[in-house]
Length: 399
Image (tube, rainbow, N blue to C red; front, side, top):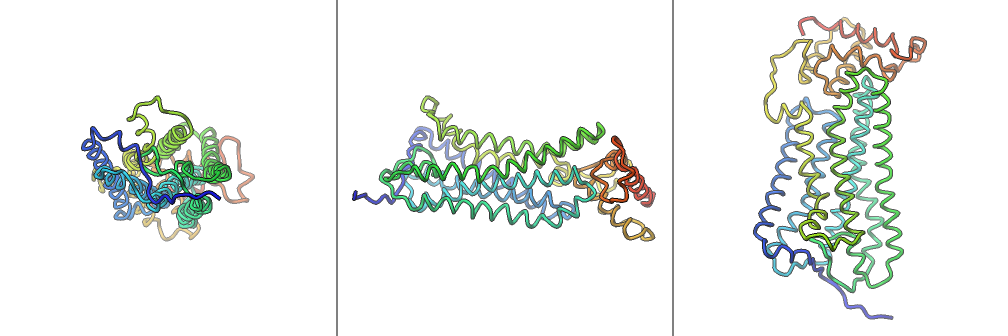
């Protein structure tokens, strides 16, 4: 039996590339971390303070911001601390903790994005039922997006925690599981196989959800009128940008971990290694803050509460519309009208009257079996369309 010297510290050799410009790197990483914290806290604060944003989509957006804080904190404080040090060594337990934080951040980010794609799917494909469906499921989705990554990764990570290590140098500025496994004294073929299988386990369900959601969204867009098609795609733009940004980061991380990139410059390798931990938390608040008018209006305080014209109703006025539904209406009509208005709110519709007829012509709006005989290939359920128009026309004229 071989005798192994116990490794208690890990040496991060990539910090030596910063020696000549250490103050510059320190200031750059510090500014990035402050920006990440400020952006995400402001976004969370806006959603928390504004009751009009207390909707499923924005709750999921808050979780994305919280995870951005989690990922940025898993990396940048340690980087700043190591830049102030001269040994560039960290303890093995700290390295293992950082690995858990980095990997659970990565899985959680992808899981939240998958949940947000489901939110867009329900909002576009079932607009009248959106509020009913998502209000019942949003809490479960949020709990799942956090519990699943935390528990799923630890099952695989146990294999790494049981390894003993003969080497202590990782050629990165932070610890990653694959880099640590390569330092093991024993054969790691089983761990590598389990690792590859875990990548499928952690990524495949989310990919299926994202592709499934957008396949149905595209189908609805193809069957819809031109204006509603453009509006539906516009509401998906921030999410598509966030998914693309994160996917690029994951691809760069996998590529530089699995392939020989010694021919690249130090700055290029550093950029590849930190992209997925820095740029999604840095860009996501900007993407959503600038792309969604409701959030943008709150951030810059440019909205006007005076507009109540039905021809150009601001989404912030939907609460007023909902509470102004005439009481003489039957209970079911009032409920349907409320769901109709909430569905427009979920889709960020600004001109309600222009979009009403287009969205009520969708097949997915009809949830009553009694309306099946009214279905037509191009105009959906005529009964539902007339019903919604009747509800809309029943609102007080002064709103």
